[in-house]
Image (tube, rainbow, N blue to C red):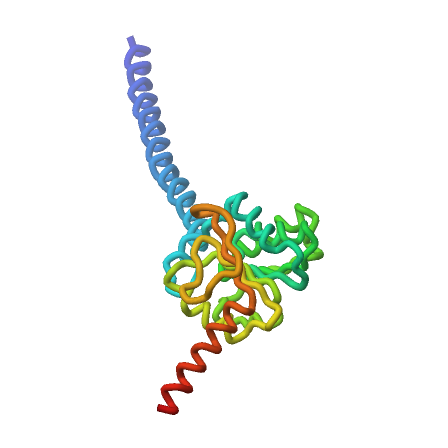
Length: 224
């Protein structure tokens, strides 16, 4: 008779402990899973935000990758050209790398450090790293006077300012190739492609003529 109470006294002790363990595990997972999810979101945000933020800045080019057709059209406009090429707002480096593959020494300026690092990796992977350089820099703080071939994937809001900057800095033998959007006042010497793949080529005659016309207008105003 004494054994029955002993067994009944053990059973209640075991059951509550099992439930408590299960509840504890559930609580631990309830804390751990949100932590993992939150950490993943933070990591994704930290990777993605450098790509997104430049698109929100007034004086920075948003990253929109060039299409293969655009690259092909740019290279057509570069045929017969010599000298160093610069891509203003070089993004992931595809224009610079493509130019290097056809014999150019090429440079890219890009404000987004993640894209610059990726461009350097791509250049190394494509075997042209010795012919290219990528710099983390604000295009408005760079002088482009040393370059004879300039490629720009601009946006309408900045083309007027860039037109003035390049007109003041570039040498007589320079060529500027605009993609997606033309310059507002320069007359292109050549254009090629259709739609968003259209590129416009401006030789020194284009931007020097604009500068000379402006100087003549100012002179006329002052002399009147």
